[in-house]
Image 1: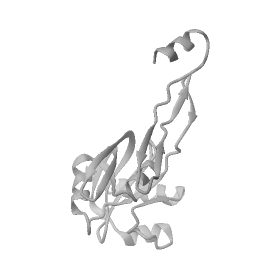
Image 2: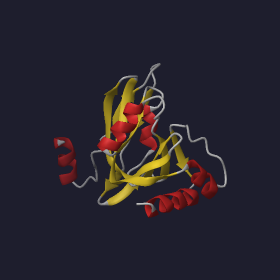
Image 3: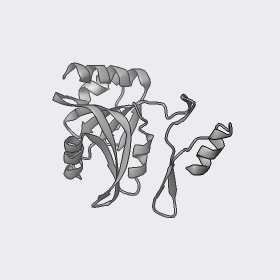
Image 4: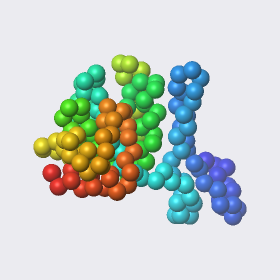
Length: 175
């Protein structure tokens, strides 16, 4: 920190850029870089999107319970936990429960945390403006708006922008 301050006082436009490296299995590492700002101007950016996240209700009911209690998106296990890093700050997140539909929505914050989980590592993204949907937004309704049959059992899907916005708006109207 002191060296950055020294160079800044001497006219060099230098900034700290914190990052995290997450160890996966088989000697694979995942790099997480936050957005970078220099003099208030955003230089790098994970563009926000609209993500549908499966709560894995059938195989991990505790994961869905955790997401609803902690108001977050969660992925667990060596294979899936790093995928949560695709959800950038400001992304809209739709939590989908198998055979029920979208049960909650929220907007991703910059807060991402590693947590211990039964089947390996867990990683969550805190959601703001978190809302439960009553009634849930069904898979049939998703298919009608999308005009196709998404594999909703996948852990994480980034929806095409217009389809995602249409689904998001319908979900928000249910609140």
